[in-house]
Length: 173
Image (cartoon, rainbow, N blue to C red; front, side, top):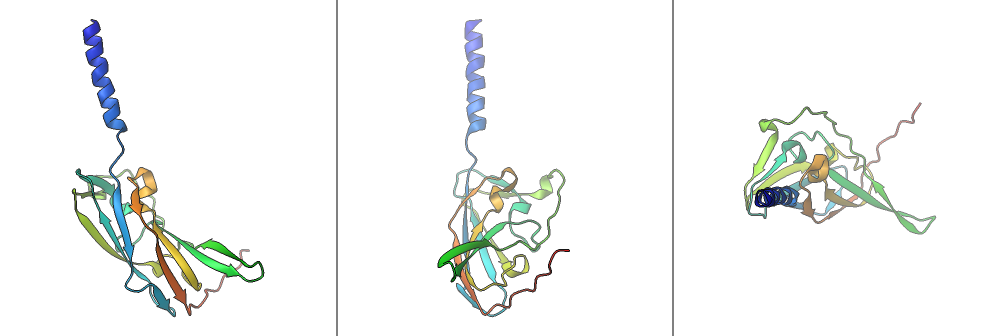
């Protein structure tokens, strides 16, 4: 009976460790054709997602940029210099796009990324984020960290916007 227990315990231990193994992280690269944007122009960005692991990674399609962004996948932070305080402050650019509630995912809601495969997406940021202020923006991709995602190794992207027309704000009642 002891050998049966030890064999069962060994199998249970192996399965616990197999489940606890960290999920494969994806490599996400952000790029733009030019880091400086003049005037009220669109701000297109290229998102390249690569699976550097030796196993297929499955992610929700909603964690990847598509034609219509349905959740906040990027973190955009603007640095602004406050002359009166002689300091630099950071301000998050608000997400203005849709927020879609989802049901439990089905097979049609997932994307499988094969080992070594790369997916490339083109996305226009100024349609989903308030980029009406001039300054330096730091852009990070946070989409794969949402909803228990795999996470991603990504380096921030820096862009400079100038000559923008600030959007009028309507005071809350």
